[in-house]
Image 1 (tube, rainbow, N blue to C red):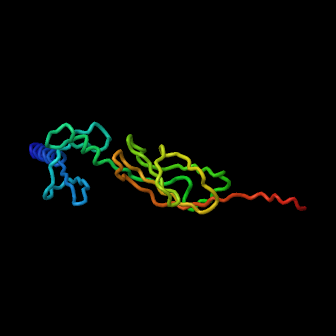
Image 2: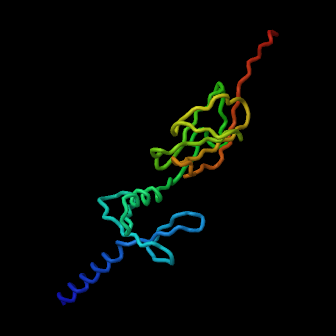
Image 3: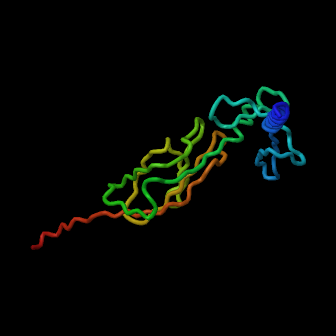
Length: 178
């Protein structure tokens, strides 16, 4: 009985080692790079590197070139979510004095070399610094804001949904009547 257990254990160990070490990479007609654990026609075999703990998946291509590992790591990076946290959707802001404070929720955070591009009220897109910024000349009325993150080449990484909000301004009655 003991010998049988050893053979079963050895077989399971060999199978798990064989299965967990390979992935496949291909590029579709639109230039999007895909990865899978299953082979497909035209896919390049990629050997998985050893992981030293909970990190993003690292690939090392079977063809050895110095630039390939960096290109593969960069190609698989993606943002999980992007939204305008403040002002909130359909929020009404009071007496902001023409200055709008904007806060973005971006996961994971903004990566080195990436930029935030803002579309405000249908105007020309504007590059801003970071996930917290201010927009000037925001007066009473209905406004729309949408943001994108682009990489160092200008490629779109992620886009938020459009966000509509309102600005109200109290008026002061200056008539001197009693």
